[in-house]
Image (spheres, rainbow, N blue to C red):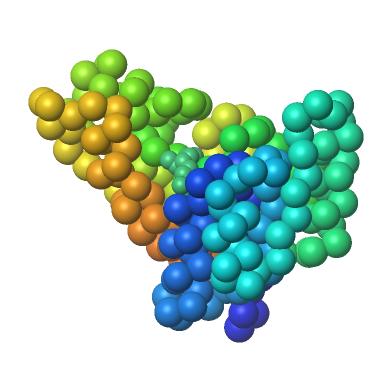
Length: 203
Ligand code: GRF
């Protein structure tokens, strides 16, 4: 990977994962530069975080427009920006197959469970409802499914008897930030071979 890979971050909400990436980029923990932040929601707090950091933002609304129009606009924005990686940081929509095919093995998502357990929404609530004693988070490459792509980094966390969805989510969040930073550092420093479902470091 080139000295300074470029990243486009897709967001929908508060943007703490984005914030962690911004700080990791400033401190040098990752060499990649965040070229732009794209939100499908006009009021996402993540947009303010990007602006504060001097990162260009774009809003491509998904609500009230035909999905095909939204997807075409997003695709055009990504084709124009030509990032090395796309990071989904609390981006709450499934990407269309065309974008996933164009950016194969270049899209990274962070999910708040140990996949393949508890994909989709409310992963922490799902973990509590199932009664597992250990959960965690997963940074993974994105494929055409929902939270099904090859795993890059996982971190684990014990669940306590008095945990609620809120306490568990709060304790998981710093682990998500670390997993995402670790995954990007991995991709920018190492060549990764994806064999079947496994991501292997090329020696
Ligand atoms: C995180 O829990 C992430 O794993 C999930 O959505 C949440 C986004 O948080 N996909 P933030 O917007 O990065 O604060």
